[in-house]
Amino acid sequence: MSPESSSLSTGRSAHEPCADRPVVLSTHGLTKDFGRLRAVDDLDLSVCRGDVFGFLGPNGAGKTTTIRMIFGLIYPTSGYAQILDHRVPERRQEALKHVGGFVDIPAFYPNMSGRRNLRLLGRMYTDVTEARISEVLDIVGLGRRGDSRVAGYSHGMKQRLGIAQALMHEPELVILDEPTSGLDPQGMKDVRELVRELGRRGTTVFLSSHLLHEVEQICNRAVIMNKGRIVVQGPVAELRPTDMSVKVLTSDQRRALEVLRAFCGTGAVVDDGEYLDVRAADDAAPEMVRRLVAEGIDVRAIIPAVEHGLEDFFLETTSGADSGTEPAGADAAAVPASEASTATSSGGTEPSR
Amino acid sequence: MSHLRREIVKVLFQRRTYVGWAGLVAIPIIMTVAVRLSTDKPQAGEGPAFLSNMAANGMFVPLAALAAMSFFLLPLVSAMTGSYVIAGEAELGTLKTLLTRPVSRTGVLLAKWAVAIMYVGVGMAFVAIAGAVAGWLVFGLHPLTTLSGGQVSVAHGFGLIALAYLMGLAGMACIVSLAVLLSTLTDSSLTAAVGALVLVLVLQALGQFSYFDFLKPYLFTSHFEDWFNLLRQPISWPPIWKALVTFTAYVLGLIGVAWWVFRRKDILS
Image 1 (cartoon, rainbow over the protein chains, first blue to last red):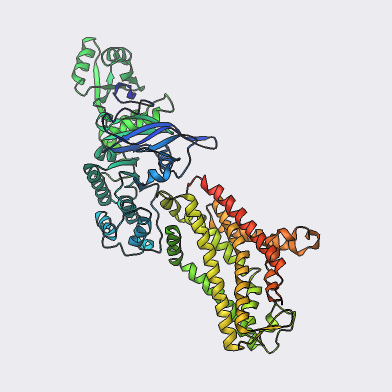
Image 2: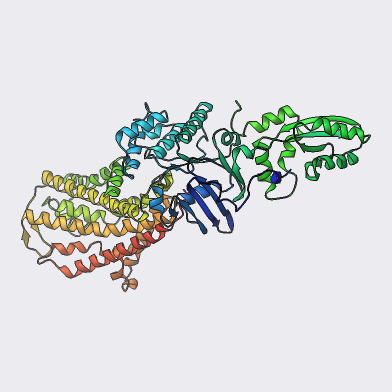
């Protein structure tokens, strides 16, 4: 179960996908070492104008380190990022005029009101008016709490204020580092709707997340990163494989393995010791049964495992990247289909809706 | 200028700003009240410099306060103020909020350093004013008897007091700069403050032993009392210039290293 069958690109072929659209953000061999640990390894990606770009990976994949390098907060060991025509870190100041966003948890001066924080930060750009500050506070739903001290804000309110400060100078590129983390379901919905709206208005958004369905819902392109490397990148529509997997139990597993491998391909069938785990097009099950019966093999059970959404793909790509052992997707498929579906669609930390 | 304005606004929005100033202002007032109420007036050579002169002339209150505070309280305030500059923002997480804007790190650092020195300067001005007012109300203001025995008018005396405070501020600028440097090296403002204070105390200790006399001219802490020379007639300028050159060298050296560190620092807070 590897992503090889998909049309997605991996690694270096990252700089052509924009076609005639200008590249707003790109990284070129971006690498960061912390002592002996390589946190980001030779990262190449490009974000085109108008993209809502998902930057996916499990915690510790190097997402935040990458974003810090894009903002010029930390210096790459080698390589560089480029925002429009400006290289970071060399021309960081020029580049950051076109960027708004936050990295990690947005932080503000606690003794000042949200509005005063925005005023203070807004003065660092050329034209952020008082009216614009009120407007962005309204956009993120803080209109009525804008004059309260940030010290009294909940995590979700700080997150919203973080988005407000990212938008106030109407930047060309908005970079949001896990913008829905810590929000309640309504807050998540609001933020996702806001990001979609930004995309519709033509703002380029670079959004990191470890929630795959979030990226599926709001992004048009994405990369999946693991252990500092890009595992795969491409349009989100292509990230979701169309096949499914079934578990097959027969009277003769050894021969069934051969038959099914002949039909579905060698890599698509794995013997997990109890069942044959078969990955195939979702209408292939009847034909599989016909072929097995034709070979005189009795089919004792055929269990639909889980539909392969981006979750599974993500788990496979991120766990398979460092070892060639059993992909995590197989574990998910070993539980009854109903449970597996709940477990994988919940995105880990978020309650399923 | 926008950097300075932003940093001043931030300082004015911190409660600690006012606590620090209030603490400083309290010292000359406490000294005045203590000397006024005690039946056993301090004798010449007793307690901090100029303490024994206070009862006769309120002009000496700000001078006695400066002499008394130069060795610990002002260094403490300077170390705490300087240490907060970068590490304090790192603790809040706002350093990254600040540096994701199109601003130069050099501008940010220099503005913060300048505002830290301004903070100490304003605090010292409050001490001088509180001392003068307390001295005036309790002991009255009279022509100032200089260390050489002559007298200068009250107005001239205030001029000398102002110069003494400015020189004191130059000494404190060394401590602020030292703390700013430590502040760029750690993400904990307390570590930076304690580090700066400990270094200042060590330098002061070195100055106490005659064995280390050869070091003395090069330690900024050895020049904290050189403003006394302003109170001679005529003013003894050479030690004053030496002190100012030493302070300037330390300030430039320390802030230069701080700039060099901060310029390429990875902001991970």
